[in-house]
Image (tube, rainbow, N blue to C red; front, side):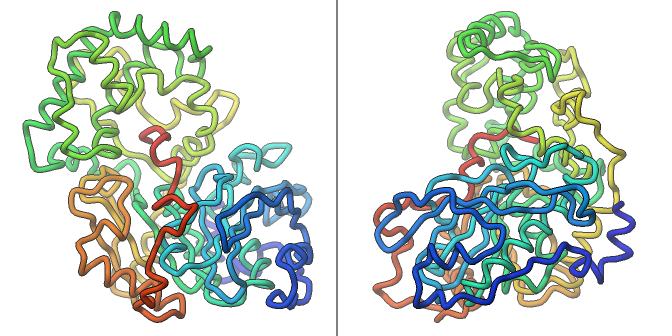
Length: 469
């Protein structure tokens, strides 16, 4: 299927099931709820409380299960809409996972003080076609076609500039959407988006061996990993007690012991993904009490992370990692004398046997990578310097135009524009505003990025909860 995508890339838009739009509503003069009701296939599930000056809607939108095969039926995809003003810019946001049901604003939405259309990624419950056909329906192109139809539909109301954004897998999704439908939005701002061009040719382990600027920090993290594996029976008993209290099971990975081992392996990656180097001061020394060691892993990577219940919501991601996206090599060689399940820390381990994984698509990611280097326009990538996912970032190339890449010094997987050095933050902010058709420097009265009722930043609520892979 992927070969077909490459050969037919110039006609992808024509192959998508067309969205029949109602005549553009005079949304500036009519109630936004009435305007939304004019969009075919859109259902207003509810209108919920929102901060002053905004309206917040939970929505579903009817999508083709397979954008190439109308016979495959349809499904209802969840969206939310944070509405401010039809004349303001609109940001298409996705986490790449489930949609948040709270009225939060991504950083680009804050910067442009705009509207935000947030979407749930297909196959994340409940946005899943029935019957399921993972091999044909869960691909990066199908997901991009979902976003394409939605953006085109909402343009009947929001006719100012459009931006696309997302963090982590959402940043990847925003990039893929732009590759397949480059004219749908005016600019794209992906955050902490990995770019595993050739799987399994990776540089993650080289990055992890040198991450941060303190060898003692890296040594302490590795020492507590070895200590935990030497005491796996002791720590496993505590984990088993917690698992029993929560009703956790481990049929997907095979056993609680296997989950524990993979969690210990992952803890080094997870520390640098979510923590800062300052957190090394809290790493227990080898030989610390079992409760102290267990508490450390609860903060960094729970020893019960890979329970069936913990994996359930992320299975579509692991499937995609095993089928198209690729995933990091496991950083475990220095632990090999203590491992019972070497080589098990791969994406396919976390996919139930009932879901069949096709042969890996080795064309999908090189195609995206080449497009970014040769054709990308108005894209701004943000990474954290110490985030392991930044080991293989998107690279701008000979054909990239009006596009930029920034690194937050010492930053992790929550890196954002506001964390950049002041001059770079001002430069990036001005760029986003220019792309949105706004003055590059906001008026003093409009400079607050966090009006009453909003959190300071909400790039991706799942960034602090999802497993490493």
